Length: 288
Ligand code: NDP
Image (cartoon, rainbow, N blue to C red; front, side):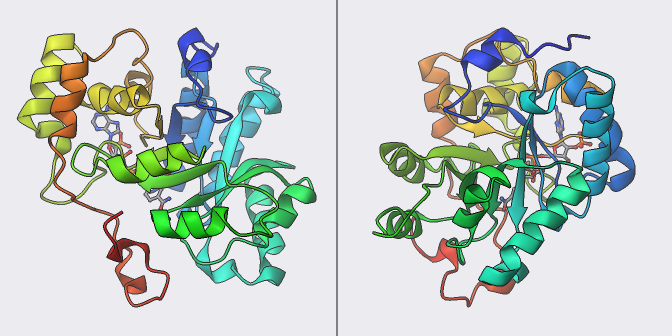
C-alpha cells in the first residue's frame, strides 16, 4: 500500500485544503481508529472531524499511531474540526476548541469550522492564539456568507464553506458565489450518505457513467466534485471502500458526463437540521 500522497492529489489541492478527505460522521468509535489508519496508509491526509461526532478521541488515536510509526508527520496532515452550536458564546469557543484538540491529541487544528451559521467572531481569536491555522464556515447560504465577508471588522476570512453537495443537490449557484469570493467549497455527503429511500449510487445515469470508466458509482461521485474544483470528504469505515474512494486520480469525466450529472439536480437536501428550522439564522429558507 502506498504511504505517499498520490502526486495528483497534491497538485489538485484546492488552495490550502487537500481536495479529498475522509469524512468521520457516524463512524463508530470502535471502527474509526482503524479506518483512519487505513486511510493514512492509502494516502489520505485530510480528515473531517467534529465535536458533535463524538469520536474525535478515536480518530486522534489513529492519527497518533501513524505519527508514532513514522508514516506521516503532523505537518503532512490537514485536520478539520467543527464548533458545535452549544459553544457559540465567545467565552466558550476556546474551551470547545481545546476539547477537540485534546480528544484529537493535537496541539493545533488546520481548520476549524463553525458547524452551523450562528456566530463566527470568536473563531478569529483561535487563529490569533495559534490554536488553529485557518477558520471556515459550514451550511452558510450565500446571504450569510456575503454578510460575513462584507463585515468591516472581519479580521480573518473563512477559507471554505462546507455544504451538502452531490448530483441531486448540485449547489451550482452557491458554489459560483463562494468561488467568486475566493472561498473554497467542501462537499459533504458526496455519496448521498445513508438516506433512507434515496440511493444515489443506484441512479442509472451515475451507474452508466461508472460502467463506461470501469469505476464504481462512488468514484464517479467523488471525481465529479474534484473536477468542479470542490473539496470532497466521503466517509467510510470499510478498508476496501476507503481505498476505492481515493482511486479517483487516474481518469477524467468528459464535459458531457459532468453535464449529465449536473442535470440530475432536484434540489434534494438530506441534511435539514429540523430542530433549528425556526431559528432566525436557519440557512435553508432561501434559494441558495
Ligand atoms: P457520504 O456521502 O460520505 O456517505 C457515507 C456512506 O456511504 C456510508 O454509509 C458509507 O458506508 C458509504 N460508502 C462510503 N464509500 C462507499 C463506496 N465506495 N461504495 C458504497 N458505499 C460507500 O455521507 P456523510 O454524511 O458521511 O458525509 C461525508 C462527511 O461529511 C461526514 O462523514 C462528515 O465528516 C461530513 N459532514 C458534514 C456535515 C456538516 O454539517 N458540516 C453534515 C454531514 C456530513 P461505510 O462507512 O460502511 O463504507
